[in-house]
Image (cartoon, rainbow over all chains, first blue to last red; front, top):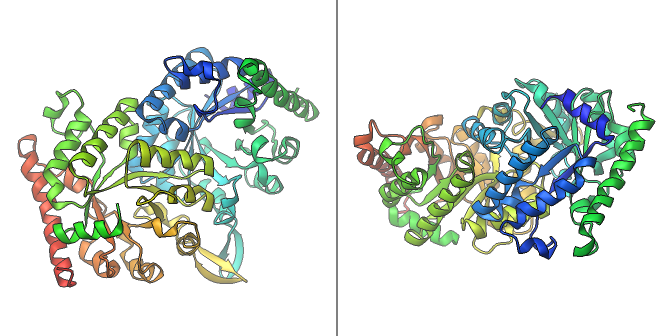
Length: 281
Length: 281
C-alpha cells in the first residue's frame, strides 16, 4: 500500500482510526465460542462491523501466539479475509520485532510475505541492521517504537544523552534522528503514544512527513483532540489506534453488534470533525 | 528450571554450550525435505546428535514464524520432544519480545505455558512494565538484550547518558542498573554479544551473579577463550551460543551426522578445558 492510498482512505472514510485486534477468548461473546475458530470468527465480525469507520487494522501478535499454532492459523485466516475483502484497508502486524540482520529478514518474510501485512511494528534497541531488513519491501512499512504510551517509557526513552559533556537530546529523539539515516527510511513510520501528547508537537517538527501510529487513547487515557492538534501534518499523517475501547465495548452479548458499531462510529465522528476543522474535507 | 540445575548440567557435561536452532529449509540436507515435517525432523536430528555436548537449545522464533502456522507447529513438536526426552536441558525462546503489560503477559503465556520454554529473550526499550510480566513465573527466566553482537549495537546501546550535565554511563549500563530494580529481577539473565568481549569484564562487575547468554562466537567472529576469561563467575554464569557454525557445519549431506557432532564436540572440548583451567572440574 502507498502513503497516497492511505490518505485517500482517510479522506473517503473521514477517519484515521486503526482498530487493534487484541483478541481474548475470555472476553468475547459466548456465541463465538461455539464456532470452530472463535478467534477468526470474532475478528471477522469486528472487521465487518467496523470497516466503514476504519482505515487500518492492527492484530496484536501476542494475543495470537498465546493460542499456539492454532492462533497463528486464525491470524492467517483473518489476514486472508482482510486482503480479499478490504484490500484498501492498511494492515499492521503489532509484533515489535527486531534482531540481527539475517533474523530480521526472516521476520520480514513472515509478516510481509506469509501473513501479507502492509506493515509491522519494530523495536529500535539493536539499531540499524535490525531494522533495515524490514525497509527493503516495496509499499511495505516498518513502524518504529519511539515514545511509547506505557509507564516504562520513562525507563530509557526519555533519558538524556550526553554529547561533549552537554545534554544533547533524549534517547527517543536520537532514535528518530538515527533512523532517518537508515537505508529505506522513507518506509518508516513511528509509534508515539497518545499519552505523550505534550511531546507530539516537537516530534512532528523532527518528522514533518512521516506517518505516526498513535496508540493509547481510550483505555490508556490519551485525548484524541489534543493528540490530533499536536500531530497532524499536510497528509494527515496519523493513525490513531483504539483496541479494547472498541472491540470490548459491548454491554452484553445481545448488544455486541450495535455497541461495537457505536463505539467505532463515535470515534470516527470525532475524527470527522477534526479533519473538517483542519480543512482536509 | 533452577540456576542450580543449569550449573549441575554444565559440570556434568563439561560444557556451557547453547545450540541455536535457526532452521532454514534451504540449508538442511535434502533427505529431510522428503519427510512430512522437515523442520521438526532436522531439529530432532540436531538435538539427538548434539545433546551430549549441549546444556541449552535456543530456537530462533523468526525462523519458525517465517514458515507460517506450520512452522509454529514444528516448534511446538520440537519443544515437546525436548521437554520429554531432555528435560535437563535449558530451553530459550529467542524471540526478543516486549510490549505493554497486558501484551507482554500474553507473550509470557505463549512461550512459558504453551510452548513450555524455560526462558525467553526480551528487549528493554519499553521498560519496566514490558519486562516484569515475564518475571513472575517460577523457575522461568527472561533474558534481557543488553549489549548485542551486531553492528547496530553502536546506534543506541553504547551512547552516553547525561546526568547533571556529566556523562554518567552508557545506555546498556543503564539498562543493567534499571533492570535490577524490577520486580522478580532475580529471574533475569542478560544477552551480551561475544564480539563485545572487552566490555564483558565491566559488565560482570555490574552483574556478579547473573547468567549471561553470549551469542556471536563462530560465524560472528567472537573468541570463546577471551569471552570466558572476561565473564565466568563462581557459578560459571555463562551460556555461549553457536548456531550456524554447528547446525550447518556439514560438508555434504552424507557427512551431516559426523560433521555436526564434530563441530559440537570441538566447542565442548574447548569449554571442558576452560572449565578445568578455572577449577570448576
